[in-house]
Amino acid sequence: MFKKLFGGNKTKDVNVEVFAPISGEYVAIEDIPDPVFAQKMMGEGFGIKPAEGIVVAPFDGEVVNVFKPSNHAVGVKAANGLEVLVHVGLETVQLGGEGFEALVNTGDKVTKGQELLKFDIDTIDSKVKSTISPVIITNTDDAEEINVESLTSLQKGETKAIDVKMK
Image 1 (cartoon, rainbow, N blue to C red):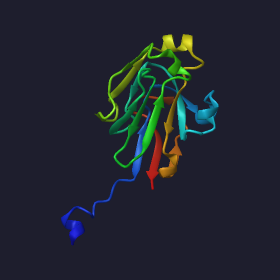
Image 2 (cartoon, helix red, strand yellow):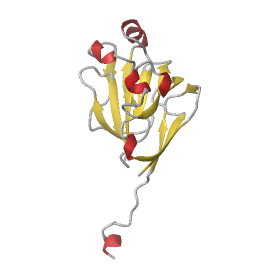
Image 3 (cartoon, rainbow, N blue to C red):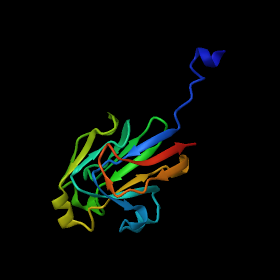
Image 4 (cartoon, rainbow, N blue to C red):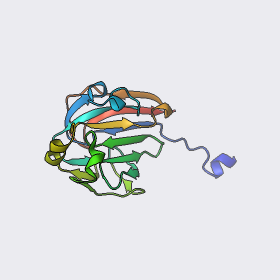
């Protein structure tokens, strides 16, 4: 009775669909040219070779981190706890923000497809190892099931890339 009275009978949705945060070419996680990502040390996911310089929210959630001052990565958390990191390019922290613009701040609520970051592909490509951008589930251990789609091309905010069932 008290559970009904105080809302205790609500169950959280454990399923999350993660959509491509960047338009471009799909890269299997094992093919990302950085061992930290390729060996899944940070978690399960995939990479994107960007076709344009915009990062959008992969699902509805909250921005838990905009990496300042470099603006090279953003973390988003879903209502059920799923956390996804979008890291633009490899070794881009060393640019100190050159070529990047954050459009959101830590704590902002976002909706799937909302623009989070802008970046200049040419600037990044000329100064770092790779523009391949990892999309990583940073709390993989909190997931019961993760299914990464096998894709070729991705459209930001439209292509479903990962199905996750949280514990």
